[in-house]
Length: 148
Image (tube, rainbow, N blue to C red; front, side):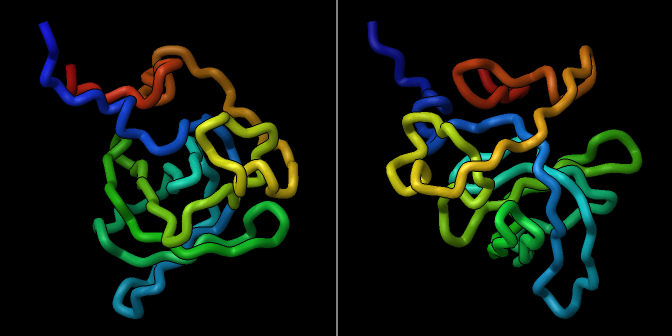
C-alpha cells in the first residue's frame, strides 16, 4: 500500500543544522525601523531561524550583517512564531542560497558550492532540556508539531 502523504523531510533542500552564529538583522523596508543584534538557532543553505525581540511580518526584506568572514546577505522573512511573551522565532529565506554561515564540514546535500566556503566553526547551542522548540528537532530533519 502506497502512502500519498507528503514527506516534509524529503522536500527539504538542505539539512538544517543547529548553530549559534552571531549576526545583525536590519529591515530594508523604510516603513519598518528595525535593527537587532541576535544569533541563529538553525541554519541551512536556504536560510536560518533567529530569535528576535519583536515580530516581523512575512515578506519583509532584511539584510544580514556581521556574518562569518565579514559577509552580508539579503533575505525575506518567511515566518514568525511567538516564543513566550517576549521573543519570536523568525524564519529568514536567503535571496541567494549558499553556505554564508561558514559551516565546515557540511552535510552532503548542501552541494559543492557550500563545501568551498571558508571553514569556521559556529558556537554550538547549549542543550536545554524541555525548552521549546530546541528539543523538537529530529535527526531526519525539522520537527513539525502539527504534522503527522
